[in-house]
Image (cartoon, rainbow, N blue to C red; front, side, top):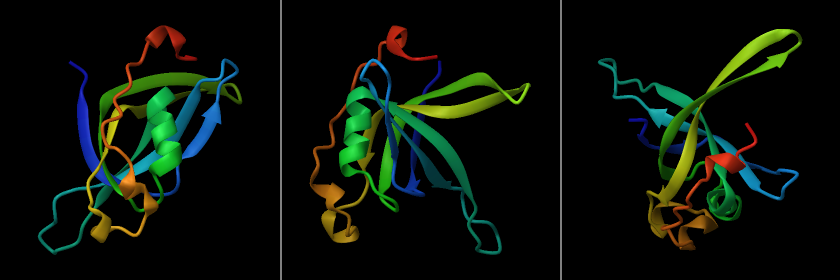
Length: 128
């Protein structure tokens, strides 16, 4: 089973691209806090995330730097070649995004968006 659920904050606004076939793709980094250490300091993991189609459109319209969201999806690994060296990437393939703050807790306009935006992903349409 490949399933992941994370809660974190966006480190910057999502980057939006459109494939040659007109399919939207959003990429963003999610900062996920680790439990507090004994000395009281927090550490975070910075996880690259990818969303496609309707989920990407939702990200484009409503997500902004600093917003706290929940992500449901799966872990995806892929590789590519750059400058003659093979590179590997591990990222979160987002299937569902949901806000974790109320309007009062965030100054971002995104809080007025509907939260149920699950989009079925057909792996045959993915560009990799």
